[in-house]
Image (cartoon, rainbow over all chains, first blue to last red; front, side, top):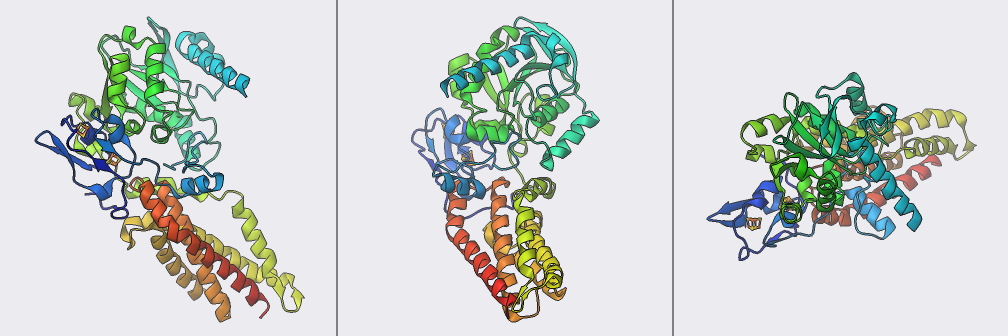
Length: 100
Length: 375
Ligand code: SF4
Ligand code: SF4
């Protein structure tokens, strides 16, 4: 259904299934159906679809998910390089364009 | 520095108080803080709350168009605080959003026919998705607002509906811990809210997934078009000037005839990267945006060549292809920021190889083109 996939095998998403209690929160917050919960255990089904937004990590009550979250935005990364900071999306302008 | 920060906080707080408690002042507020049509007021335990209209006026539609085209994008915000649609009571649902005017506009329109509360967080006028990434639409701000407004007194239930794209900034279990409210994540698109409510606050997988269809991509193009802002004027002007150089000195005639071609080529390259590539995104081979941009840049170059815009000498021709490819590729890569499926790790990986190449292409192309002036 989702025809748009970005690069393969680059995503930093990790799941510690040991800790998972099967609450389903990760499947609810993920905008790309990356997780699947079966038999009260989560597993990653579409890793390459992950956009590293970090919603799953933030909403997992068991701290079972880790992902280096950030915005996949080239101009944000360039901003970061120029200012010597982490990538920052320049949506500081109110209205914050579409960026991120 | 310190004094300034303190001042800002009190100022914001006062504005919020205005919105929640002191509706009288609404009429005097400037367009910047209350551009949303208010059609009434409701008394609550936390003060008077403004009732918002659920229809869009021409001004709202016009405003949303202006935002897309980057005209007066600044200051398009709504005063944070609690608002109402219809005539909500203590059993009504609470929808959370950011104080970017379009976010509020989409929400109030989606809630037409319902009685509900709208809790507008202070996201500094930025949309929910962006603000959640920066955590201004986040756990802390939501907790602060729930406590500040004494939401637990305004409604008797303990549920708040947060747009799913806000989940990047909001931690549902922390909200529960700190306020007792359960976060229910609503659909990604405001248009699905009706169905979501009708089905008993259940978002279907489709409602939860971000897609990136053609219309959405087209809507984002204008924003990117103005990415380069005044460079859009300066760079073509420089090309115009350089175009007049030749081995015999400077020729104004040449500047005009070649300059026009140069400017057309540059704009074509720019558009090919930031309009054509995004529009055709899923149909262009390769996953990397920079490669997609090169392909469309090449096609654009071929069209310009057939139209006789790339000059007469071989050097000039090659130079233009390099410049067009570099520019188109760079602009296409920038669209990763607008897309809804690119990861930070992925873009970093792509840029590591693409950016040096783009700069080299454009640089060699530029030098080649200048040299070709004198041949
Ligand atoms: S949110 Fe965490 S605990 Fe809940 S299902 Fe997902 S991984 Fe398991
Ligand atoms: S980081 Fe975002 S896109 Fe990736 S799995 Fe988590 S919620 Fe889904």
